[in-house]
Structure formats: structure tokens, C-alpha cells
Length: 553
Image (cartoon, rainbow, N blue to C red; front, side, top):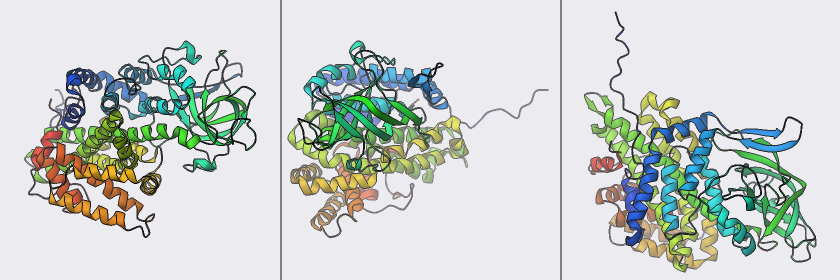
């Protein structure tokens, strides 16, 4: 007689076999809004193809395998020679190859490239955020390298290539290349001006050897790295010395390996598929100067700004996947006499989560569009909006991941649901490229030094003026905060939070459905909200907000 105790009922089907792009209303609308009419169909097809790949069982399996089989450091070969190589599971290479082939390192060379690339990054990294690190670094290095036209001419075509070749060979012999970054050191952390790595000039102009240790090196398997090092005062014939930016190739033009000693890989909370390392330069490590001596921070800041936008996008990606999973589970799971999604209290939780996700996505795409516009006004907007968005959106990611996991109950606490992986990933983007205090201080610095940036920011807010009284009142409160400079550093987080929320409110009022904008303004700007998700005013149209976030299968 057969056992009947394992009949499976009341379980949600896997969220697989769908178009990750096409099923995201906030994202598809934002892409259409920020894309020229003559390119909309092309971009929609391009992102739809990637979205279907991202939602496939195969891509989801790649994400699982890349995280279950993290990278391994091999410092020596069998004969005792230093090789300093990081090896990855084949699934990692499949993920990176797909990312590169779909232009995730190519925003700078095509029309509307940042909107297309930001949307693709948000879509493709939902299966595995870890491999987004080298993709992000490679993309972001382009503006920094343009400080040296000769270097840019040699490296930019490789970085924006659609071909991924993982083998370590001289970059001029490869059709495509990846670039990493190493700025922070043990004694300095985010205070990179405290770096002690030294750069001694060689006889040839622009060539140096480095001595020092980097506490965090992103993507140590890359073909090259942007690093910061101190040129001793008086050591150079052509510059004043000081903190300077360098390009360190992994393999030298003659085919020999540069001295790049990987001491260990970091054992991280999340981001397990990706390698982060401590590296050492031994006094023979060859590097080429990028930009002027003493101008290292100014040279690399373009890379930092671009990766900060990726932090916003990466957080939006994690939030979107977490919300999609929570809504999907609630649509199929029944409890207390009906589907969870129809229960008023669960509907309130899901709608609250959906608001956070949509606001993050809408803001990320608006910033990408500002990059594409390239005007002085948009550049000024980015100067304030990027660090403010980086501060706020990335901090919202972890509470969203926690609450979304809880929507699945015990199922969400199990690794097979992938929700624990999203939770472990969720704090990363808040820490990477400067934690919250760094972003808040950067906003203060811009307010003090670049008054045109505040004008551009307020002009963006003003485009929604009069659309909602709660928004108008929030803007007035923000202006009051800005007018009072007493104790400004201690109040910086409060100020930047208000800036980010009013910017999101402005965008949702202009572009989102009325029920989404109404709920956001009531809760985030009007104060009709509790201390946890699921505390929205019950009179709002929450069912419409939840349905908009649902993946149709």
C-alpha cells in the first residue's frame, strides 16, 4: 500500500520561465520614458531577450552554482612558482559572458547607452549580484581612463567589447578585457588620502613601480586595475608628487606576469560568487600613471560616481527580485480560507514593499538618463542626486529583503528559496564605494562647493510642484533644513534622507500610476506610516499597487 503523506499541496510553483524585464512595469515604463522614440522598439527587444534569459531555469541554475562553488585562490603552481590566480566555477563564466555580450560594460559608446545598460544590469544581476562587480568596475573605468587619451585609446575598446575572454594574456592580444580597482588600505579605509602605497617613477615618462598593500581589491582576476598610490614629493621630474591614479596591468606587454601578489580572498557575508582580495605590490610592480600627479582622487572620481550609480541599481535589483518572489508566493499560497495576496494585512505588507522597489527603480533609471543627456544641468543634478540616492536606496535594501523573506515564512528561511542569498547580499551596496556617512558628507561637500548642483536638484523637484500637498510640504521642510547650517554635519543623514525621498516623490508623482504616487506621498512624505512595512493607510488602493508588482505567469 503506497504512502500518501507526501502529496504536495498549497505550495507556490517556481518563479521561473518568465521575462524579468517585461514583467517589471516600473522598469519597462522608465526605459520607454527615457529612450528616444526611434529606438524604443530596438531597446525593448534587446532588453526583452535578456529578460527572458534572466528568467530562465538555466540562468537561475547558473546563479545557484556560482554561489555554491565560490572562487578559489591558487598562489603557486605545482613547481612552487607564484601564479596568483583565482579560479571560478563554469557557471560564473557563463554569467559574465552573458553580461558582457549584452553590453553591460558598454554604456559609453552607443545612443542612450546608460539607460539601456542600467536596465540590463538591473535585470541580469537578479540571479547573481556577485558577478556584477567586475562588470560594474569595467564599465566605470572608462571615464577615469579618458584622463589619458593614449591609455583610453588602447583600453577602452577592450573594456566596451562584447567578448569575454577570461585567460590572462597581454591586453593588446585580447578582444575584450575586464578591469578591477584597488583603493582602500588597512590604515585608511574610505580615507584614501591616508594611503601609504608608494609609487617611484622610472626613467620612461608615465611609468612607475609600486610598493604597498591594498586591503580591498575588487575583482582580482581582472586584466588590469586602477589603483591609488603616493608619489613622494620631489621624486618626479614632471610632477609635484602626492596621491596619484595608476593603471596596473595584470600581464605586461611582453607576456610576463606583473608582480601582483594575492595574499588571500575575503570570506564575506554575501556576494559569495565574487572574489575580493588583499593584494601586495613588492617594489617591482609596474604601473602607468593616469592623469596628473597629485590628482588621483580627481582622476578616479568618475569611476567612483559610475559605480555608485551601480550600487543604486544593484540595490534596486535585489529589491525587485525579493518583492517579485514575495508577491508570487502570496498569490499561490492559501491560509485562513483564501490566497495570502487577498488578505488585507498581507496586501498592506506587499504594497509597502512594492512602493520601495518601484521608487528605487524609477530613481536609478532617472540618474542613468541624466548620464545620457550629458548637459551641464544634468551633470549638476548627478553631483547631488547620485550620493543621495546611494545613501538612501541602498539602505532600504536590507529591510525590504528581510520583510520579503518573512512573507514566505519558513520557506523563505531555507536556502532553496534563494531569499537567504538576497538577504546576505542586501547590505553590500550600502558599504561598497563609501558607506552611508561618506555619501552624506559628499552631499554636504557638493552643497558647499557647487551651488549650481542644488539649483539643478531643486529644479528637478519643482517639476512636480503642486501635484500633491504632502510633497509640497516635504519640499518646504527640506528647504528649511538647507537654510539652517548649524550642526549640519551631525544632521547630514537626516538631510540626505529627505533629499532622496523628495526626489523619489517627484519622480513618482510625474511618472507612476496615481495609486502608487498617492501611497508613497502618504507614507514616506506625509508621515502616515508606522515603523515597519505593512503600516500604510488602509484607505489607499493597495490591491492595484500589489498587482502592478506581480509577475504574470
